[in-house]
Image: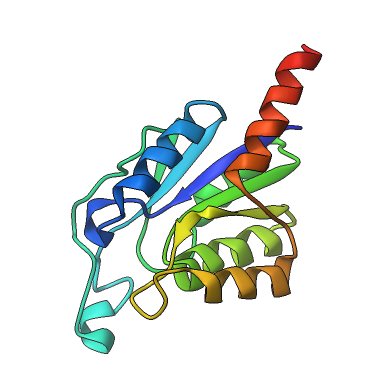
Length: 164
């Protein structure tokens, strides 16, 4: 299956757990992968004014990928969506930080673009409201239905390798 991994905001600003970084690195080494990094620009997204907080103005993905897209807010950029569309993939695997906000927003952007988002449920961490990410996983299942785990992906990759 042609697929790409979208790694959402696994960056220092959001203090990802080391296990998430390590597992995302493992998967990104086996699949085409891109990442988003959220940076602060108050003129684009008024985090400070509305929330009294903002992400860093400079940061980078903690996972090595083929391409990184900078965003200023919750959703993916038009450039990132177009890049994914041009890859001609059958599904977009999504993982990362803030399951019920930025990861879910990525799902909506991908879905609205006619792409097939699939959440990697054991490669996501929720916000401080729900670090388990379960709220976001439940919302994802409700809106997009498609979920998988790293174990299921490992089995798929092994099966693909055997067929080749």
